[in-house]
Figure 1: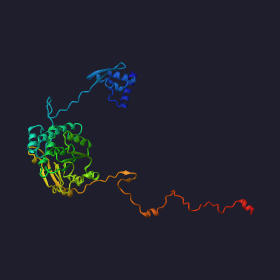
Figure 2: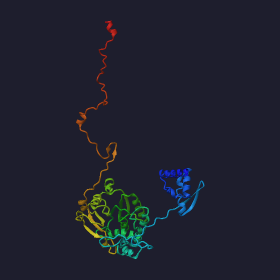
Figure 3: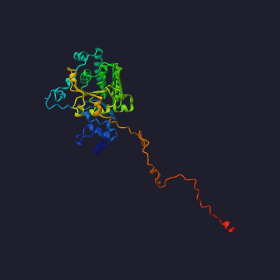
Figure 4: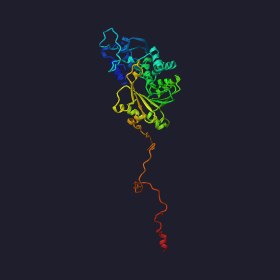
Length: 401
């Protein structure tokens, strides 16, 4: 009995020090499997092999194994019971959580979804937006590709990612810009830059609608841009290019982008003053314009510079959207955006900053600089050595005198 108690407390010590998931029960509840556990602990059998022994008596085990004559079973814990809602009765299924509602109109997020293969979608694309059936097929395929890629790379929100949500909340609001006045008429070829494109919106849908114009999609997340480029190639869009990096650095390191673009697109990327400070210098001075899709309120200093403010739902009446499109010209961007707030890259290299000139030291500080104590100086060989041998006389020469 004394040996049994000693083995029991020894197992308590090992279970505390080794961080095991199993702790022996109180002494008064010892069972046959507990005694087997204690015996195994005293015989130096690894405790992690037997930490499920106690579950054999009351658990739902299907596999039993034997170590040194002792039986061990694999007992699996039951699934945790999901707490029922306070409003549901026992035996009733819990109702699905209500979707969030907007404060102003009381509509749900389900009102923004639309099946891309439905007749209503086809009517919007072909009749309202005046696109071809081939372009409609590309747009419907785009919604499918976004959902497929979104499982591995977070292109759009994964909460309710389906082809209906992608088509109703992302693709249609992007295509609504086709009915915006003074936007990409079918004249000469124009250069368009989409800043902060994310999953390719609004750049990819507009590239399908305007194959004659060139689109540059910019984002600082490389994984998203790789997917966007792969989707563009699968859809056969030869007018789409991507740029991985920050837009405020494009002029500094890629001079070909300066004053190049006719239109800049953005969709709730950053506050408008900051966004305009980034893109200032990319738009052409004579006819460059910014089209910014936003859903919230804007500052008074910004609203005073807006050329036009158009709700997207007015551009496509059969579509539900709470966002609106703001139009700015290059001069208004320069007024409240100013020059780009770019930080100079200062990388340390051998004690100096790359791109910075060393400070010239004043001549006085060099001329009258005190030598440091113990400082090594090159010896001046023009001064004769003072060895003390010039007046030296030997004793034998003195005796000879």
